[in-house]
Amino acid sequence: MSRLRAVVVSLSSLLLSSSLWRCEDSWLRPFARSLLRFLGFLFWGAAAALAFSGIFVILMYKNYRYLFQESFLSLPGWLAVAAALILLPTGLLAVSIAAKGSRYQQGALMYLLLVLLCLEMSSAVLAQLYSIRMASELKSTMGYLVYQYNGTDSQGPDSRAVDAVQRKLQCCGIQNYTDWLKATAASWHLPAEKAWVPESCCKEKYSHCGGDLGHLEQLFQEGCLKKLEDWLHFVMLYIFSCCIVLSVLELLAGVSNGILMRHQPFHDLRILDSSTFS
Image: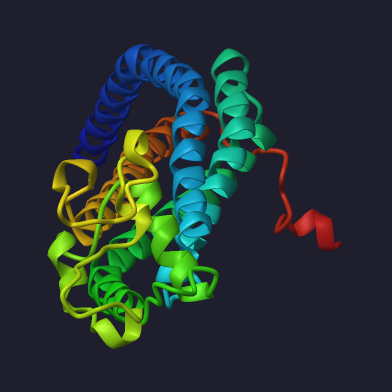
């Protein structure tokens, strides 16, 4: 009698769990499919944003490479561009799986999501590290270039670098235009009573002002260091934010795909089946 009761209890619990499974299946799978389809379309738009952030970093290093001692500054940008390219087939797979599930497509999607997470986390970590390290390097490099500037030989590499930065950023000196007052008259080969700045400090409409400090209204007075640091922090924060947000979305896509895989297991991959080795 006790055995019969145990059998009845086990059967009732089995039926109860089966009904709960069906109830869960009735809303969970459609929700996972809808979320995966939405994320698939979102990945295509996110690929453009991530590629844009990566190109930002690459162009910044290209334009100001003479100011950065670190030769791998553009690495976060290249990683972001690679991730953006992989996001395109990932979004296509997500939409395809949501429309009509395929075991092999689900496995490929999981693999691509894992690759993307590795690329984006690497890019985010490198962007954060470079943002901190480059600030101190910029100050020392800018200081060296300013004090090595030769007013009579503007074609030298150091002089060209300073002029290029001041023209692109519309700035003058390190902190401000007064940094040029610390340049010795001997290095500029000018009379001691005269005070001058490079012509690259001149505003565009006064491009031939000659760098005379007697006409400050014709010169850029803001320093270059703060502008460079602000630009560096903006670019690195942008790529960091893109990578973090995308990583969260990819985790959601992985969970949704996992739910669909749980309800559609790989029955036909019986590699360890005993009949395979008989």
